[in-house]
Length: 250
Image (cartoon, rainbow, N blue to C red; front, side):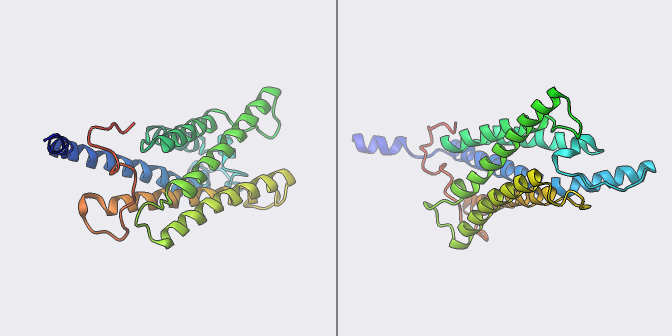
């Protein structure tokens, strides 16, 4: 009798099942939002500068920022800051398991730090130089945290994830770290500082597109298996199935 009663108590009610679907939908939307920002932001900054110069009748020379952070001092400052604030909110609101909660919250705080601490201008004061150091630290930590999601969270050995999908996440994580290292090296060495499109910006573009593609892929992977519907990719084990209906998601 005790076993039967326990089994009956663990049967998932329609209400709890609907709540789980809603939570999965929220996770999917947040993943897609993070990925969309990563994909759209790199081309939006130079395109926005060029469009602003074109509409105001100014010369369009030098519309390409020296780095993504240099958008602080161009016509797309509000786009850059707004996108990073949105990225930070999405990451802080992202909830899955305890490890991912901590990682996403930290990444969200770092994104807000990048948005609120401008990079140092070409002729900085002492305060601007100090704030610029914080900016670089926040930016580096943000990319590292996003790489960790690709390397450890989205590559889930407990799921029926195809090897090619896991390899794609691995490649994205490695690409983020390699591009980040290349951006640091080119920035410190001054390599390509006279190019129309600076190597630093190209490295940042690669890293940003890598995490954007990975987060969109993770959103598609989760959405493909929702509600038992067949999809192009099998359902990723996100930890929701392992919880009992009474267990909280946070």
